[in-house]
Image 1 (cartoon, rainbow, N blue to C red):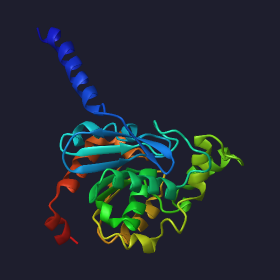
Image 2 (image 1 turned 90 degrees about the vertical axis):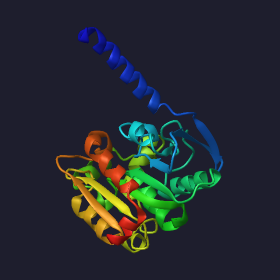
Image 3 (image 1 turned 30 degrees about the vertical axis):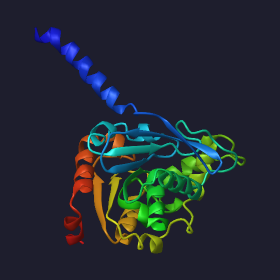
Length: 263
């Protein structure tokens, strides 16, 4: 009897999980002359999901969406040329992606939201907090660098090997971006020091970003907490959801008074 029920139960759980990860409705906003696609899930306090480079909001956080949509209203935009959002002429820039994200939040009349950013998305999260602190409540960032030098030597060598002199595809544009940005005008230690928001800084101990660089970011932020995952590479959210999810959930749900008293 148990053997007969088990396949049906597995199918039901799979169906429920798949349904939970489907966006309630795909939305499109025309921002700065181009389209931005974004997915929405769940209800509750808003949690903005900012994906890694070359990925999408739903894929970067596919191991988080089911859990966090139970208690949060998730918004997962796809940046220009990535996910469902089409590319536009010209190079990619963190400033341009950050400005698109700001405009999207303003269109949705959202302020004081929690932001979870992976890799490039973490860079955008920091830039958002620097330039528009009124839009941000707390930040969770993983695998973030504030300069190209934060990448490991191996990562930079690999990028130089495939760099195109005239980038046309999104992959080529991303390679150019990663070797030249964030620029000092976009992010630097002095700018990080102005972020008076709680920030959870996450890294794998085998990350594509050097641990020294991650520690520099952590020490520059006035209200930062540090989480280094052992035996973990750049893919923290996808590779270690059993560790990441409860840690992030506790950080986001913690009372404001508790956060302030620990500083």
